Length: 81
Image (cartoon, rainbow, N blue to C red; front, top):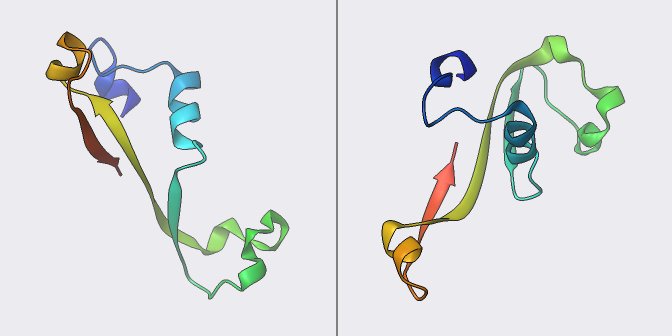
């Protein structure tokens, strides 16, 4: 996505994008070719060859035009996937 966003208002510096990706509120759905045990959080037990795909999800709030213009303006609830 970085190449597509370059030169647009959507471009985000790499360090900021990594901070967003690994925000404590981010949750990951991991799809593997073998079942993961409950101890799978241990990176030593995970074989990346078994990774078939993943998705990340984070719920947040963002300023709206109303919240930028007025102190008591509403913020919007958003989900990043």
